[in-house]
Image (cartoon, rainbow, N blue to C red):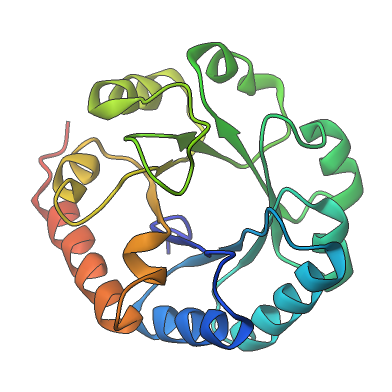
Length: 213
């Protein structure tokens, strides 16, 4: 199974109870990976939320990824870490988490993309494909052409993130990208499970319709 196919990134504005509900329902709907993103909570709150989600995911086969914070990932024994460009260097993070955990890195420019080949990472988060209200500091939008070019540039799995929704999903999938990451489309849905099931069905249908190169 491709663990990157439907990658849920959580919304830090959710209460803990809502967060658990969203993740629980999204797993039922078919998400394949969950990243806990907490930009503004203190470390104690981050650990509490991450621990709650780790407990919830036990036995599901869905990996738990921690955004930015290697210390939190180690504290809860998460399945991996996703780093931004201003976070701990990837080499140091790999030394700390060991060889068997997943390590992802956000890539926001062609220059950054060109430098990933020597890094000990497992996948790339290509950000942002389109403009998105959940990430307002993005300087570059890759678009479909940029995503296609990135896929031809690296052999690492790529997860597309930023502004992806039902309306542009078909175009994203048509590039052959390994996975898509979603925040609002699931976290803000009235019925997270139904939203996830709809997205998963579109992913699987569009993958089946792609003509092999």
